[in-house]
Length: 203
Image (cartoon, rainbow, N blue to C red; front, side, top):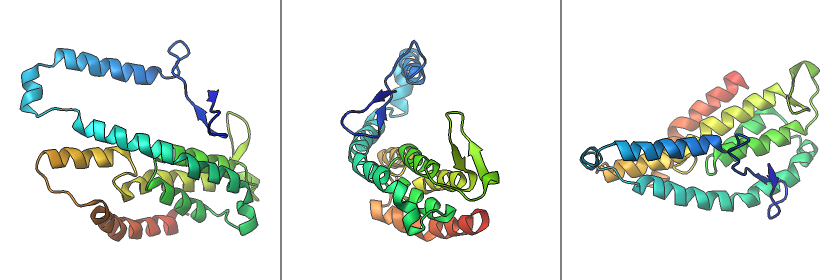
């Protein structure tokens, strides 16, 4: 990990094939290259294969990752102050993580709230999980953060990369898709009630 000088509190993962960091990405790109070489052009042409969808997703998420630096730094700054406002319950972390994950990427959202929860004191020592990197985190908070980050990425087209990519592929195939807010009308009407049930049952 190399410290990020532009955005304090964050780090860039630098690909280093010799130490295994970034090896996964290199393997994926290599397999994609092998597939392009071995698959006949006729098959790709028959399937209308192109890189438009993944290109749109890449451009979108480059912008998201740039813009999300500000809210992440704000969370780093205000995280230790949450106990002052009694904002330390699993239900708070579930919705706070979920709202951010709905419009940003779930992985960095998870990391930010994970680090925030790790810095909080927890009354019941039996519910603390010891981390391999040192320190402890309350299991109820970890469960809440995990549920919020994963489930609520479906709340919008940009909450998760595949959401927008499937929309783009469907539109290329002539399938009419809802607008950004039209999709959210469905997600709010269907998913939010389900998330309320999840909160009541598991948190």
